[in-house]
Amino acid sequence: MPGEMPAENTPTGAHAASLDKGPAHRGAPQRLAQAALRDVPWEVGVAKPDPAIVVENVTRTFGGLTAVSVDRLEIQRGGITGLIGPNGAGKTTLFNLLTGFDQPNTGTWSFDGRPLGKLAPHQVARLGVVRTFQLTKALSRLTVLENMLLGAQGQRGESFLRALVPGTWRSQEKANTEKALELLRRFKLDAKKDEFAGTLSGGQRKLLEMARALMSDPQVVMLDEPMAGVNPALTQSLLGHVKDLREEGMTVIFVEHDMDVVRDISDWVVVMAAGRVIAEGPPESISQNQAVVDAYLGAHHDAPLTVEEEDQVLAEAERRIAHEEHGEVIDSDTTTRGEGR
Ligand SMILES: Nc1ncnc2c1ncn2[C@@H]1O[C@H](COP(=O)(O)OP(=O)(O)OP(=O)(O)O)[C@@H](O)[C@H]1O
Image 1 (cartoon, rainbow, N blue to C red):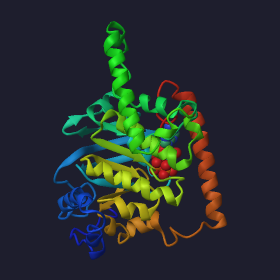
Image 2 (image 1 turned 60 degrees about the vertical axis):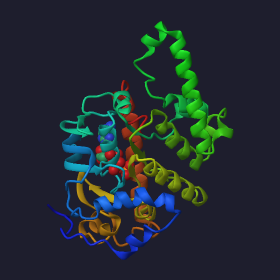
Image 3 (image 1 turned 90 degrees about the vertical axis):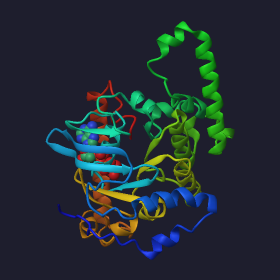
Image 4 (image 1 turned 45 degrees about the vertical axis):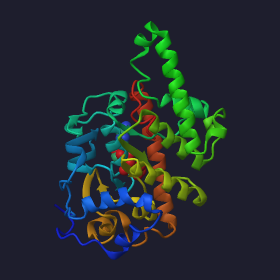
């Protein structure tokens, strides 16, 4: 397969050294996750020692475009997996599929051996797999606390039972509110609980997205660009929160464009391009892979954009807006694109 990594796994000293950073109590799960992956070959579709998620033969097309075509992908339990790739690589579509916000043309995927295909998002969430959502216009008009309560497990599908047992409903609501307030304290958003979410800064929105996802006590958390639009001061705090999720035993998959962030927090990196996984391996393996450099990193990945590149980014943004507007019309009964972006 093009872009496969060399089979021999040669972790570098730089990565090994990063294990020793931070307080001792933070090191253990990171060491565990990285030790578990140490002998895994850098090959696309490679089996993991203890996979939480297994994806097989998943394809999703939009008209003539193949957005996702993943033959096999295993996500190691308890680790932080970074999902990278150029715009339009299929990362968000894969997130949407895995969490029930979109349905594939073919394929299966499972969490802990349980098939998740055909389940609605709230059912997937109840089994322990959630994704974050960017604050949409509608959510911006709710308060921070209301946003949190929307993330609570079992918000949908139980209204009938609750209506029959009002006491249960009230105690559930009280428990959810307490949990929400506790999470808001942890993410330092408690002072903002009654403010409209739309008034939050970029970084605070990202904190809210993460906090909201935790309302359903997930075991697998998928973070869509957790650092996008965040100022440098808050980046470290957000990175700390992501590492804390692993600390608590969660499996984290995150989409991110900033390679420094990817290198800093990933135990394993999966690279997508044109819907396919073209490489996977520990962070230090990625920049050594010619297919990844060609498809994504390029020679000037971290350099400022040229005028031509800026034009391309602008054109891509316009194309996306057109898709979203189109998606709202044709997908009005689902949240496939509207909520996910
Ligand atoms: N609802 C939709 N209708 C039509 N095309 C879509 C839809 N959703 C995604 N696509 C297309 O599928 C491809 C994959 O898109 P996706 O958003 O998953 O990529 P991505 O890797 O997340 O990109 P980015 O990094 O820019 O967010 C793109 O070409 C996109 O335009």
